[in-house]
Length: 109
Image (spheres, rainbow, N blue to C red):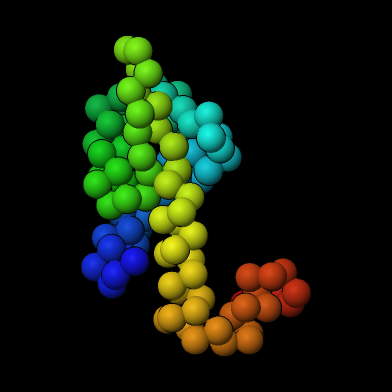
């Protein structure tokens, strides 16, 4: 994953509704969720949910698949994993204090 992709993903995630959408879709796993279900979960109107889903998909944070008349959205776990890996390994150079916080071994902040 290149730096521009990382920046696009971070930019897409830096908005409250979008972050809520991603958290929900991660919980949904491989089943994903329809746009209507996502909107209900994050308390967004259908047009607002569609706007945010489009931004997240464009950044590579989520993906979509048409199933009959519905579009099912899923978290793009490989891309999210690459983003986290970049932050931990490349950006933070495997700093032990940061890694300890991620592993839940010590209280951070």
